[in-house]
Image (cartoon, rainbow, N blue to C red; front, side, top):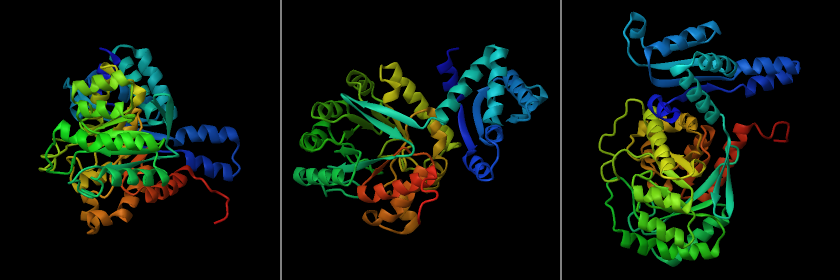
Length: 414
């Protein structure tokens, strides 16, 4: 079995973690010798990993190997009663113990060696912090300690929060300039509402709304433009007029869009959605929301790569509000870093969404404070970028959240 096929089958992911940073910091303050800090820090950096569908023999081998190095794994109890069945394997170990486990699995060969490679790739992905996407002749750095802000420009009559506000091309361009002035790293232009219950519009109508705006904005600002569309003809026209990124809520489900992204070598945002905008909020259900989102995005990444899209050009978005209840949205924001197992930058779009209104009672245009809280917590949980209506406020909230995460400002005046 190919490694990528094995990874797609077992969906390895880090589901819980503990950083050694604060432990190491305390030891340094206490004057612990550097070698002691190194050894203890390796044991304090801890991760819980889950892999599904592992054959019973490999699962038992993993368990035995971990017990030998003072770590452990949880597997289906039926495996111990002699039932030859596939099982989830949940490993709890420090990074130092993972190193020993991976070596032992590699030496065992066969499926154990495949699992070793899959776990190693997952861990490398999880602890990766810096990315870069290519925008033609330039590039855009994406760093966990400097989250990007993507400004929303809806050129629609019926978007849930600002429908009709920027339908006039002149007003839309002025708003794009304002967002650029407030420090937007990307301006995301869309011409079709994807609010719950919305109906699709024709490609011709969507192009009539967005193309004049894309053309005008591209001529006036250097800020990269993304085109928010699931239609390949709209994306192609927008790229021709100066857009540099495709933001597709269907995660390149259309093979024509995959071919276009490969042909233009442009960055793509792959978003998770359950159903369609028209149906997605009709009793959405998940058994394991982060596991299911991770597997969905993992498969879409591989489909895109198979079509010729560069892996390094892909960004993932868990799709807050797209086929999710309030609890689902909160679970995603709390456990967002599980998606880091995919090794791609994470974009979160919680801005003004209805779950924030449910929690606060605020109407859509008045959810700025709630959005700021969601964005700050998303950054704390691992988001590399946030998609927002209010760029100036978002710049402040992500700056504070990322500084707290990085532990910046120690020893400075308050």
